[in-house]
Length: 68
Figure 1: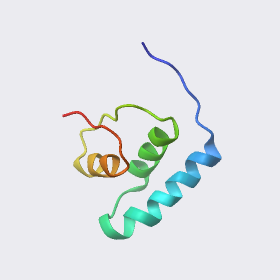
Figure 2: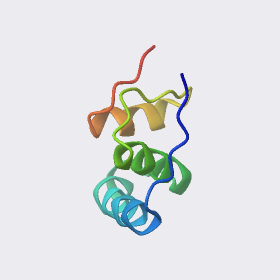
Figure 3: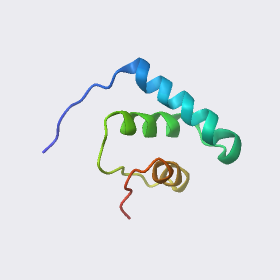
């Protein structure tokens, strides 16, 4: 079952800014990867799906479950 959710934009952007400061200098994380992970965290998702190794590492670092 799918549910359409609309995260609060300001809160999501604030979370993305936090992730930028935490991960970009060390890992070179890209803006869209950070926005996707910030949105998933904001929506309290259970799983995060990605084929991108860097995005996988970022998501797992934030406690998201990324199935293989």
